[in-house]
Image (cartoon, rainbow, N blue to C red; front, side, top):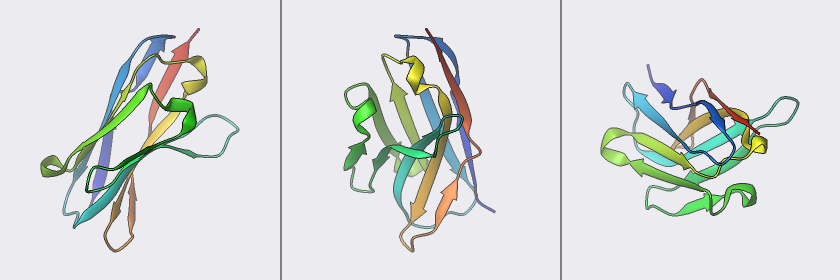
Length: 116
């Protein structure tokens, strides 16, 4: 049974920082891409950032220059460092890990709230 466990969400003032972590437990074979998504109330889930097994990264335009995604392959863990947070970053953040066979595992989500 594979589970992704996220941590690090919370309430922060605009301009502040948070670091999200997502660790996979159980037997997860050959993780390829790891990523973070977010979903604000009344909006569809959107990609925030992703990172391949080789370390190539991709960011949504809204977070470029403020967020940094990284991964620790030995620990099957992905991180999202979020700096200069804005109220529009408020959402539930989900991590996703995709295997080489194309299967997605999702975390349960962690709430990030940025006050103005």
